[in-house]
Length: 107
Length: 118
Picture 1 (cartoon, rainbow over the protein chains, first blue to last red):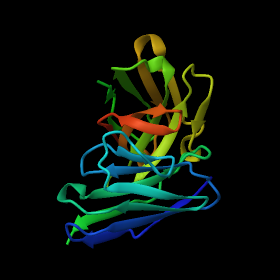
Picture 2 (tube, rainbow over the protein chains, first blue to last red; picture 1 turned 120 degrees about the vertical axis):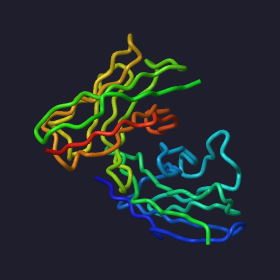
Picture 3 (spheres, rainbow over the protein chains, first blue to last red; picture 1 turned 180 degrees about the vertical axis):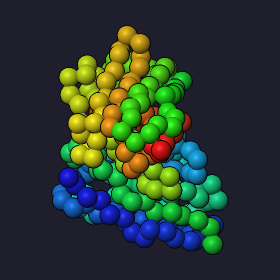
Picture 4 (cartoon, each protein chain N blue to C red; picture 1 turned 180 degrees about the horizontal axis):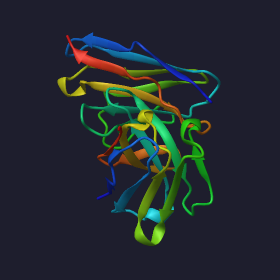
């Protein structure tokens, strides 16, 4: 199975800051990567698919990049409503494993 | 509007069984792969299983193989997860999700809690 890692596991940033999360796959997954946002008590929400494609209706301050084994998720200007845990997920081969998550809060 | 509503969760003893259901509406259910994802209390997301549009292909995470069975009824717009030989470590909120292109979970239900405890 493909293992996914994320860093950092948590971060605190100020409103307006640029926030970057990295995700690494244990083997080449091309661009077969999703990013999800999950707020407490809620279901996950798809933000990015195919590593860099923004899901319809998602604010443009969210972006993703990368291919192969190394990926990056960025919030260009952190907003209070972005407080959540963010997960990457590979879909190169089942099981479609998730990363352990990165918890983002406001400093 | 796409809606996914899970049901069937509850408290079950170790070794017991439970069947989860997911009622879908607002889209052509028979045109999409569907999946189950779970989240243990205070933990991250774990992909559990998925199923092709016609039920001809199914995939599972190793930890549930041989114990869980994913199925669907396209006439009833419903997805199921039959869970047998339940263990404490299966305790989680179980989400169903619609899979665009079979791999992108673009809509999720609100989840149903399964608690395995004596």
